[in-house]
Length: 290
Ligand code: A3P
Image (tube, protein in one colour):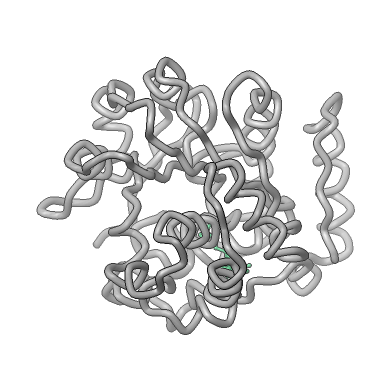
């Protein structure tokens, strides 16, 4: 594996392999019964994927342990080197009803998802924890650009120069679109604070009954501690030349407020000013501590 370059697709920096095959990704044919899980990277994608899959499998742990999470739910725009399958090809070969994952900003989502009126679950995470998580992820994920030093990385993050572009643009555009489409907009911090309640919310959105024992199992199996130990959820099944957990584990901390151990006071103040400016006019609010 070599660390990829980023190439802009309509102004959004994406891994070069994704950019090269952009025409095929943009032309992806969605079906009306597709469910799209969308996040900015490191907002809790794997967490919501596991919650959704467990709901869809009626809380049966055996079914959820059938394969690693990245094999159960294709990652639409991921284009790994051959012979590994590309996300959109895996998705095309999958029997309906399909659940798919993407990190694409709203304007880059293939238009067929809107034409087919697909349901979307979006998860957003406060930008300080999101940036810290992404920094450590780019250290351990050997296929993404190396993040460099933290202070430099934080500036790149704010400027939108990281893979999948600006956090601010991403969360904002999806927020503004939430009433125009069938979008359930969730927050990492809410799931952390009330896992049971947020699982029930997802269940209602998917039109699924969650009897108490099923709900109980899902709550247990999607706690940070359970997922960290679960090889089907923690990405330990990928070889270390792809994800090097010795550098930083994929299931790293799983908390709200870890940013306080990484940001200096000056960095936090600078970030707050940038945040206020970039989110001006938006009613989207985040909590950075529980
Ligand atoms: P940290 O790096 O802050 O620990 P993604 O799946 O989008 O790549 O996001 C990964 C982040 O979600 C990591 O954050 C990871 O620890 C956290 N995460 C994954 N499963 C979780 C869970 N069950 N509870 C809380 N956080 C979880």
